[in-house]
Structure formats: structure tokens, C-alpha cells
Length: 269
Image (spheres, rainbow, N blue to C red):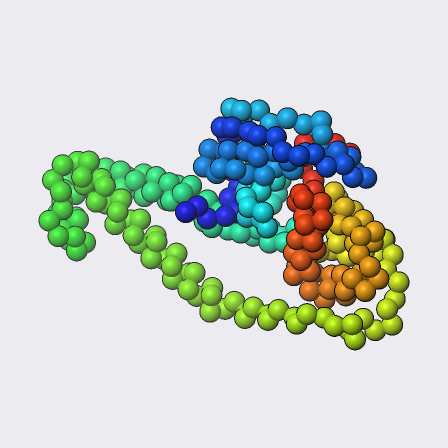
């Protein structure tokens, strides 16, 4: 099974139009897309918009509350493997969201080094079979291509071993994950200070929501929730923003029948 999220160029194989939703930010429509390597992916876009079969779009496919979802992004926007956005969300290392690409690159590098080693041994009048036998590999192949693969395997194994050691050392230095905060009760609300839209939008943005999602969720909180629910949302966004944003996303989807809209690089405002 593929591991999500994955960020790369995605080619559209088929597309089906979903229902439309009108809010204060415009008209949005869900598109259900079969990408090459990912089927039935939801892409929520502001209209007018189309998704063309055969065209490729760069972005990230991740798992949401209602299945796979696509977010279009701009290649080379400075978000490196360990880059943190202003909202505090951390990108995963490339080895996690595209292990196939990393494996291909590592193998190609090992093969390139293997070729240079074989050329060096030939200049030294040393047969590669003798060199492999001396390295501990029993019964190395005699043919050139077999020798190349054997040396590549040896180099790739050494790189993988070094990576596993580094990963294990990093996990020992990593601080323990904080335990989720218990669900808040009404006593946690203090004096029940009023919830204004500006404060709520600032909290949504601080939790990592973009310029489309933050005002949409703010409007949902301020106009759809009762006074106690608003206070719960406010306190939650102040203390456990990521947990509460997830709960609010679910509530938004159950209310409107669609995911919370998010900004895309192709959405003009």
C-alpha cells in the first residue's frame, strides 16, 4: 500500500465532477480524480476551474477525513524536507513521502560508483572478482554485468546500514511526544470572554490554516456554533490547535458535506 503524504507531479487518468458549494469566498467544486498512482482523490477547487485528463499537476496527496485529497503546490517554493511553514506544520523527509524516488536515486549513485571502482581496478591490473572475494563476498560472478550489480549491492547495503544507524540515533535524541490534552469542560472557559471573528481568524491562521481555510473555518465557528461551542473552539485553538483543528474540520465536513476549502496556487483572489 502507498504511504501518504506524497509530493510530486501527478498525471490525471480520469476525472469526475462532484457537487458544488457556495460560500462567502466564492463557488467551489469537488473533483474526484484518478491520478497515476492514486485513485479517487478529492481536489476541492474554486470555480471557474477544470481538471484535464492527461495533464500533470504538482502537489501533495494526503489522507483526510474523507479519503485521499490533493493540494496543488508550486515546485521549488523553498519548502525543503525539514522546512516548517509559518503555521508550524512540518514537512516530512523525502524518504517518507517518496521512498521509490529515494531508492532509485540511491541505486543509481551506487551503480555509478561501482563503475568507477571497476575502472580503477582495471587500471591497477586487479580483477574485480579478486577484489570482491577479498571484501568477503563468496563466489562473485564472473561476467561484467554481474560484477557491476554485485559491487552496487555492496555499496547500497553500506549506505542503507549507515542510514539506519543515523535514524536510530536520531530517535534516541527525539523528545517524547506530549500526551493529548483531555477534553475541555465548561470550567476551563474562565469568564466566557466574547469570541470575535478577528481573534478566531488569527487563531486559525496560527494553527496553520491558509488564507482560504482560515476565514472559512472562522465563519463556520462564529455563525454555526453556539456560545459554549465557540468558547470550546477558542480555548482549544489556544491550547491544542492541531487537535482542535482536526475536530473542527470534521464538524465542517459533516455540516456542509465537503472538506474545508484550502488555497491553491491556481486560485486567484
